Length: 102
Image 1 (tube, rainbow, N blue to C red):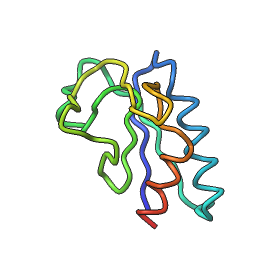
Image 2: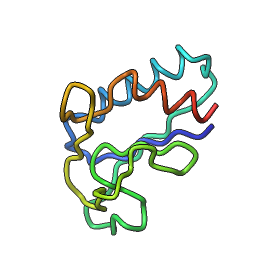
Image 3: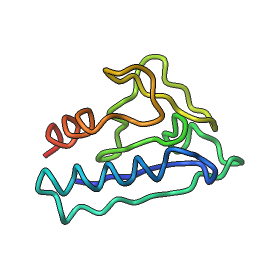
Protein backbone atom coordinates (compact mmCIF):
# COMPACT_ATOMS: atom_id res chain seq x y z
CA UNK A 1 0.00 0.00 0.00
CA UNK A 2 1.29 3.44 -0.91
CA UNK A 3 0.05 6.42 1.14
CA UNK A 4 0.75 10.02 0.18
CA UNK A 5 -0.21 13.25 1.91
CA UNK A 6 -0.15 16.31 -0.34
CA UNK A 7 -0.32 19.68 1.38
CA UNK A 8 0.49 23.36 1.16
CA UNK A 9 3.34 24.58 3.36
CA UNK A 10 1.04 26.80 5.44
CA UNK A 11 -1.84 24.32 5.77
CA UNK A 12 -3.10 24.26 9.37
CA UNK A 13 -4.43 20.67 9.08
CA UNK A 14 -1.70 18.61 7.43
CA UNK A 15 0.23 17.69 10.61
CA UNK A 16 -2.88 16.44 12.41
CA UNK A 17 -3.83 14.48 9.30
CA UNK A 18 -0.35 12.94 9.17
CA UNK A 19 -0.61 11.93 12.85
CA UNK A 20 -4.04 10.37 12.33
CA UNK A 21 -2.85 8.48 9.25
CA UNK A 22 0.14 7.05 11.13
CA UNK A 23 -2.02 6.05 14.11
CA UNK A 24 -4.59 4.35 11.86
CA UNK A 25 -1.94 2.53 9.82
CA UNK A 26 -0.32 1.26 13.03
CA UNK A 27 -3.67 0.30 14.60
CA UNK A 28 -4.64 -1.69 11.51
CA UNK A 29 -1.36 -3.60 11.37
CA UNK A 30 0.31 -1.58 8.62
CA UNK A 31 3.39 -0.56 10.61
CA UNK A 32 5.60 -1.00 7.54
CA UNK A 33 3.67 1.44 5.32
CA UNK A 34 5.51 4.70 4.84
CA UNK A 35 3.60 7.94 4.41
CA UNK A 36 5.10 10.26 1.83
CA UNK A 37 4.28 13.87 2.74
CA UNK A 38 4.83 16.31 -0.11
CA UNK A 39 4.57 20.08 -0.07
CA UNK A 40 2.72 21.32 -3.15
CA UNK A 41 4.20 24.34 -4.86
CA UNK A 42 1.43 26.92 -5.43
CA UNK A 43 2.94 27.57 -8.86
CA UNK A 44 2.51 23.92 -9.89
CA UNK A 45 -0.72 23.04 -11.73
CA UNK A 46 -3.02 21.29 -9.25
CA UNK A 47 -4.56 19.10 -11.94
CA UNK A 48 -1.21 17.40 -12.59
CA UNK A 49 -0.80 16.28 -8.99
CA UNK A 50 -4.34 15.07 -8.22
CA UNK A 51 -4.36 17.80 -5.59
CA UNK A 52 -7.88 18.69 -4.42
CA UNK A 53 -6.83 21.11 -1.70
CA UNK A 54 -4.73 20.85 1.42
CA UNK A 55 -4.45 18.23 2.79
CA UNK A 56 -5.12 15.62 0.11
CA UNK A 57 -4.66 11.94 0.96
CA UNK A 58 -3.81 9.47 -1.80
CA UNK A 59 -3.92 5.72 -1.23
CA UNK A 60 -2.32 3.76 -4.05
CA UNK A 61 -2.52 6.91 -6.17
CA UNK A 62 -6.24 7.47 -5.65
CA UNK A 63 -8.02 10.10 -3.56
CA UNK A 64 -10.47 8.03 -1.47
CA UNK A 65 -12.34 11.18 -0.45
CA UNK A 66 -12.81 12.58 -3.96
CA UNK A 67 -16.32 13.58 -4.91
CA UNK A 68 -18.05 15.16 -7.87
CA UNK A 69 -17.54 18.48 -6.12
CA UNK A 70 -13.78 17.97 -5.61
CA UNK A 71 -11.81 20.63 -7.41
CA UNK A 72 -8.13 20.83 -8.15
CA UNK A 73 -7.18 23.88 -6.12
CA UNK A 74 -4.40 25.44 -4.12
CA UNK A 75 -6.58 26.10 -1.10
CA UNK A 76 -7.65 24.51 2.16
CA UNK A 77 -9.69 21.38 1.71
CA UNK A 78 -12.73 20.49 3.76
CA UNK A 79 -13.97 16.99 4.48
CA UNK A 80 -17.55 15.96 5.19
CA UNK A 81 -17.50 13.97 8.43
CA UNK A 82 -20.28 12.57 10.64
CA UNK A 83 -19.68 15.59 12.90
CA UNK A 84 -19.91 18.12 10.05
CA UNK A 85 -17.30 19.89 7.95
CA UNK A 86 -13.68 19.49 9.11
CA UNK A 87 -10.13 20.13 7.91
CA UNK A 88 -9.34 16.40 7.85
CA UNK A 89 -11.20 13.08 7.87
CA UNK A 90 -12.08 11.40 11.15
CA UNK A 91 -10.16 8.42 12.52
CA UNK A 92 -13.11 6.16 11.63
CA UNK A 93 -13.16 7.42 8.03
CA UNK A 94 -9.42 6.80 7.69
CA UNK A 95 -9.77 3.31 9.20
CA UNK A 96 -12.45 2.45 6.65
CA UNK A 97 -10.22 3.64 3.78
CA UNK A 98 -7.16 1.73 5.01
CA UNK A 99 -9.13 -1.47 5.61
CA UNK A 100 -10.68 -1.29 2.15
CA UNK A 101 -7.20 -1.04 0.56
CA UNK A 102 -5.58 -3.81 2.61
